[in-house]
Image (cartoon, rainbow, N blue to C red; front, side, top):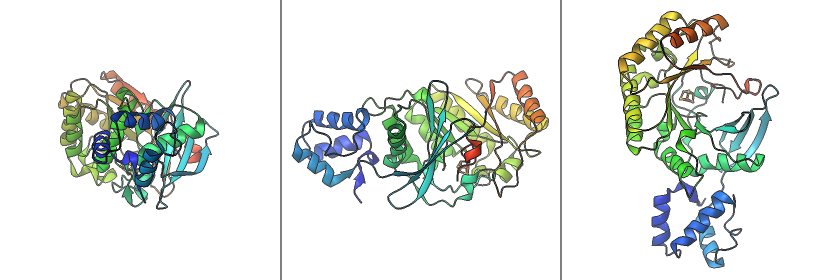
Length: 342
Ligand code: SF4
């Protein structure tokens, strides 16, 4: 199996091209134009490159390695769930979320997940391997081609903990933002993490300015440990402090994600603990809070909160001065909603 070209960062490719005497640097620009603007999926199709250069590229690199093996569209809201297969026959999912005038794509970064959050279907899929940056970007190329759309909003919220696949996710973000790549504004890219403290701090220093979403889900250590057994190896103050550092280093939004589980973390006392913990972190700006009504998953013991509890939780946070949003489930009928991907 040849390396995928986009498994390398722009910097690595520049080095590679100069080492291999691939020609003038403008040749590289031509290659990127073919890949990102023309969506050319073969080197042979890059017709303004010399035949010898195309052959050389072809001998050394591949451009696509995934294939879409299934597409399911929600009858409720037209969310589309794409099942991908890798070159080594691993399957995983990405979800295309339609809005009025644009789409958001929720991409995966790993096959399976080792973090085992108890409310999440992906946590039931044993961790298999990281996706390479080429494979993560392939999700975008293939979905854009399949729908004839241009994506400008990307969420790292599919299967896997993105920061457990740090170097590939970093390269992916660089390609997403790059003028030679997808040219997506960082304010339209959101990376979601369950709170891998060293990597949040490391990412902060990269100053990529992408939005950070922290899957906190409880501000009580005991409850968090029960529902997020792996992530809770870092204490809540440690995690929030890392997010504070990220916020200080980056010009971007910080969002606290909070899934509401009936009688687990959805009572007023839980909302009070959340406010107290967030206020005591003294963030640069108050983080936004996303409340996520739980989407049921077979074989998991949780139930969605009542409408009344969701409303009370929301109002309490709002009255404390937070910008709160209750997420509307999308793609529930096809198992594509938040926490349902497996
Ligand atoms: S919420 Fe994220 S980190 Fe937790 S099990 Fe699901 S995919 Fe993994």
